[in-house]
Amino acid sequence: MSFLNQLKQQAKSLQSQQEVDLQHLEANVAATEAACKTTWHYFTELPRQLNVIEPAAARLSLDGKTPWPAMKQTDFRFDARKKLLRDKEVFDYLALGWRLEPREGGAAKGSVAVNFPPDLERVERRLRAGHVPHERREQRHPDTHRIQLIVFEHELASRASVLITADHDNAVLDIRLACVNGLEIVTTRYAADQWTTAVLDELAKLIVGEPSLFL
Image: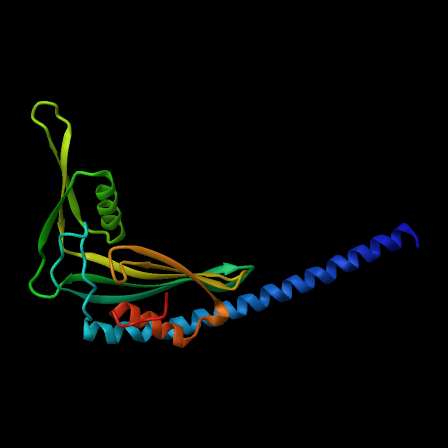
């Protein structure tokens, strides 16, 4: 066999592999888009119902010791954005966001005080997770000026969200849950072909505080 024929065979083999890879990517994109469209239809309807119900929020606390009053979940909104992938328009992400506020009365404020690094880290992490408006004050020793206590004065208000980011090439959905049943951020991942209306039902149960298999 001449060297030219060897090159022809090598090129043909590479072209065949590229075609197989492209077909695999196209199948992944199709599965991911189907999952995103299922989410789009579900998230288009879900906020309408939850804004009427205004379900109770989970018990909240920044330090684990000072409970917030009974909170409700309200002002649910849905947003979705698209992007170009290999000259094709596909979903980039789908997001559901809402507010947590006291069920009785209007805006209110609270405060927590911490003096140990682990407690400080926990409180600051929860403030960031919930986008809780707050001010930080330091209490120092009158003689040594060393910090004795850190006080956070904060609003009794938070934001929660579900962010679903599509990874089309790998046919997976990355899920980020912020302040869903607590002032924490939780992440998980689902294969696109496993993402169904039944899974979205479990996510909705998680949001409203009913027993859920989502996580």
